[in-house]
Length: 378
Image (cartoon, rainbow, N blue to C red):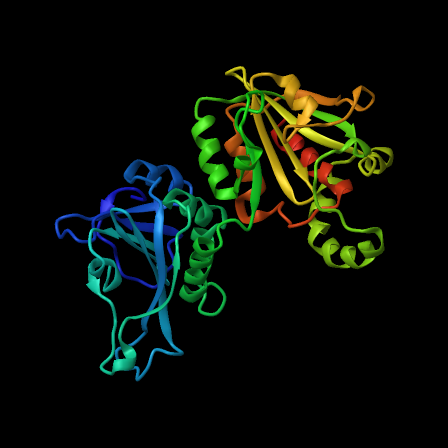
């Protein structure tokens, strides 16, 4: 039922599903109900998810036809223009709805094949409130963003999780697509003209990893250790005189991560060592490829190569250090079956449960330990 073709129902019980109408401008077609688990793959099968967004606008209409104005009480939704389609996306008390059409009117003026509510005064018409360009954001990246923010599972709430908040979140993601950059190098052992092309948004990383790891599964995982003193990666570090103030701000955010690591049972010696050494994870796959995953103070770095040594010697194509500070194997294990890098991304970014803007160097290794514990064979 969740992915079957059907007409949308009307009700006030939140379903935790997305309703997608691929041809809202054709009367003889219906839509699809899609669950959170199905979201990314199902939509990828139904549409060209690589379409780039040209423009996006926030629209509003009154909640009731009896309103004199929709300045304070209104439903908000986003209309998107790509090269070939018009789209609308919105959330209400029943579900999240995405509509697609060849003409603007079928998504701007209609909701699930019915006219949107308007009033009888000039102040209660459907109104465009704000517009932005789409940059290089694709439909697939936007879907990835909605999925990892767990929007389908956030039950509609009149004050906290309402249509206006959802529309603002979607619009802001399109307006500011590079606020959560990751360094991703899909061929770290091959020549590259410019390393700058490796920086991309989390949502683009999801798309690239899904493409590359479709047939790959992990067979083994390892943790490697290098001294923090050998860290040659340019990054943002807090000056010593500002550290107390910075910790006041960041410790409450980092506390759940630190507590989770403590629960893993590492000895006091091991815990203290985390602040002098740096740990990162290397995965081996059934296809003979290797992935490294590591957290730097201001970003995540993901690298893929067929030559494992390059992942041990370099990070972001910069040497990790000299022969005196080479990467040393700390732990190894078989990997849990039927998992790949997509699962690691989900573990880190679904609900952003292990994400914070800045992480002190001494705490970065804890991400590696969490990943190792999650994906090692039992």
